[in-house]
Image (cartoon, rainbow, N blue to C red; front, side, top):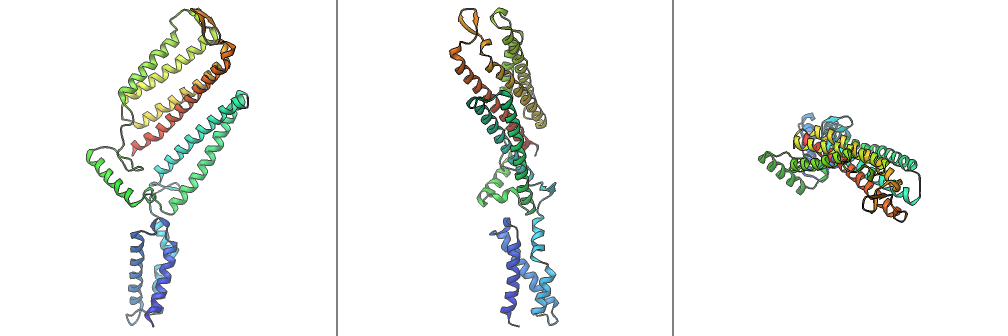
Length: 342
């Protein structure tokens, strides 16, 4: 039989294999090698199956059948990676990182949008809180479903995180990993570069001590009790208790240093709870300007003047937003520390 006809049969099969191969293999050197090896195996098998030891149409067809369908061959390459639930172990760090970033963005936008609506649309505090809770729930559940489906599909296709990077980026990653290993430094398998220490122990201890001092002062209130309205004094003690807890947590993180990442994550969890506890107190202060200390003359206490109510509420709103942002920062730190477990 004409060799051109046999070549056409084999090439047609290889085209189908090429089409079925996962995208991460296409347009790469490995992709060409796979097709070349497969072609060689087909011709070798065709000769073995031929009675004359020369490939013919029947032996070529049998050899192709022996190799399996294009989908079956492609499936072998899609099994790349170690399974972990529906997402491979290799894709898992990137998956959790993307989830964390998206969750933080959703929480930030929901809180900010609800706070803005609270003032622009003059909604009630209960409505604002309900809006925040509902927005976060819907946003997180929707994002979780979409991102999980995407990463499950990528895992089924055999993708690795490095497949999304150029060859130049992959070479740089290998060089950085080698450098980190030579210097005995930890490195990120997600980013492919050495990881800097995640905290500065001295700074954490100093900051914690300052917070502890202010917290104790707010708790004990070592000044004339007649200066403050009783309701404000009670709120100040609550603030003192929370600040004292936060200062103690910061000091403990500084003492632990750049070790025990799981412990740091737990401490950040307690810090987040403490910061969230501050928000209701700030909202109470925002809605009760008449109890906030205002000294018109030395040691004479009155509430905030009516003409300053709006600027006062704006300032309190800014403080609430800052607390929310620092809470989100702690969530990000929990995600970031995960790298050190690798």
